[in-house]
Length: 231
Length: 386
Ligand SMILES: Nc1ncnc2c1ncn2[C@@H]1O[C@H](COP(=O)(O)OP(=O)(O)OP(=O)(O)O)[C@@H](O)[C@H]1O
Ligand SMILES: [Mg+2]
Image: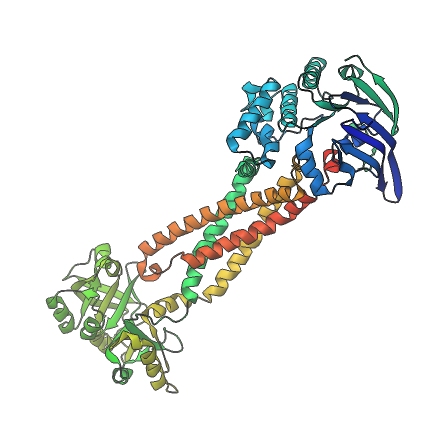
């Protein structure tokens, strides 16, 4: 079936270190339908981040095909790929990666600087996104003035603001305590169920994976099983 | 606009560092503005336009006095209307305070310098009093000298026949300037050349320099060449130039101003290059993960390069313009304090253009390497801290 939003076909990835070729992903194939929420688990070094970066268009596979919403992203040039990311992907990282010099709303506004949108419209959208993640009252705060959970919410708002096709999260709760992690995961779940966002999330934490619709297990660069979780 | 805000915010991420860098840039451009204004002033070509007077000096140096006997010959050059002469007296008062003092012919001075304004009676007194001296309004006010005062003036060059270095003159007049600008230049004392010539142990036949009034200011260049031609191959070769150029030459004596200025500026800019370059390199290095994040958001390599370059540019423009503005203010102050020397020095369009060019070159030099590095950044490596 080619109705999946993300089609990964036989993707391989190797790195060359000196004369040594390190094969990190060995022929991965996955279909991710629109509206899915996939958790990607596996031991450290199994290639989770590598795979996620390929799906998000941050890096290119050594072999195989990746099609997102009908576009072959594995064939794109660097410039095409950054354009594509701006339109289609929102990223959330373990360490939030907000820009410390900008306020929350200016951080969220960043992706919109790449559009033709006017300043007022950009700010309006940034505040809507902050409202969705429940942080409208912190719009003028700098990241330093926010807690870890709040920073991650701002990061999620930034990932949402340009209404991307796909949300890609690398251990979004890896640096948070249980309670805050649950709040963030609940938020992601809501974005998936209420707003229909397709989410791929890497996590180490089986509890976190329970929030997803299904979990994929990666081991030494190979996909193990595809277990559907209760949604 | 949004990007400009971002560049602005990034610039100030480390406030102290940004401030220090901007301060040093301000200093650099302050020096640049001051020195470059002087250099432009001194290295401007010979300027006879609108010259009302020519100054004839010894070709060797203006400190070599020309003899008085050249006077009739200069007077006979076609186009010369009148000639006066000034012998530098080297006057000092009190402990060792110099007073610009010249021995001159009163009648000739009056004709050659209509800018000096004084009553008829005083001019006549100056002509008729052997030991007479006239004092510029500025000096008179400064020292509290009045008409009728005895003026004890030491010369650090000329002893009297009895060996005494102290001369005594009678103040017979205080002269004013024709307008505000000339008024501010009434800083000299003139003494009677006849008396000086007769009482001085040596230097009697010396005229110093000659000031030549022209029949037609448009022929200044031609007359200047004719005068110099007349004394070519004589024991007293001359150098004739406009009064303005002569005043510049007075300072150019100090050395090759252009070269000195260039050397200082090279040193300054080398320092500032290292300093600002270091600031920029550091600013980018500590921000690599942030720059990578921008790229994940879809900022292209070129855009990231431009952002970093924009930051360097903003830094250099802020420091540069602030420094140049300060230089302009200081030059204005100098011009007011000492108009006879600095009146014509200004940070004009040429200097500003040079400054802006320097800012741009500096921004490129310090901004391009880190900007290119930021542009080339590979996202996955930067995010993983590799
Ligand atoms: N740019 C690279 N150059 C060389 N080796 C790399 C590079 N990127 C990843 N690797 C290697 O690929 C393997 C998989 O890395 P990856 O970051 O995908 O693991 P991960 O599953 O995300 O691990 P973790 O749970 O620790 O984040 C590791 O052995 C890593 O050293
Ligand atoms: Mg990882």
